[in-house]
Image (tube, rainbow, N blue to C red; front, top):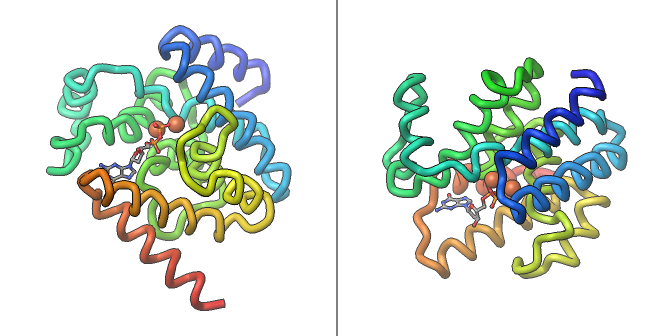
Length: 194
Ligand code: DGI
Ligand code: FE
Ligand code: FE
């Protein structure tokens, strides 16, 4: 993806997202770029992944479900019950089909940005973390600690976010996607190895 195309995608996001979600999206894009710089990875790739990560967020649930059905994208029981979870799957599909992204790493970062997955790539971790810490986020506990940690130890920040997310989902009685649980357990084990 050439740099000039980033501007086109930014404009497309401004059109398709509501104002708050667009501001969040810009926050994730520049936070992801900053994290990529910090860890010596591709900042433009991270910016683009950040720009697109919520591209399906402002779409009606019924439309997300229809897109999945039409294109043979599987919907799990928990996704049927919590259709917002589908914005990651549908977003990665739209990134390919509508926004012409061919970079598999970006597609995967969009696909896994909500639940994470065991064995995430660096870009997947960067987008997942940027989504949580970008400056417009205000509610999460431990935010200032996690914001600092993200630029010091990517895996430690990831684990803390997973832990806090599961704790939050338990307190609000939110249904937990098995992938969110698996991701947490995987990174908890990883942390104990070293
Ligand atoms: O789309 P965003 O709001 O920017 O961020 P996101 O795609 O990471 O979604 C965040 C929400 O997703 C947050 O409230 C926690 C929730 N979430 C993460 N894993 C799960 C989950 N919600 C449910 N019900 N189950 C999960 O496993
Ligand atoms: Fe999201
Ligand atoms: Fe997001």
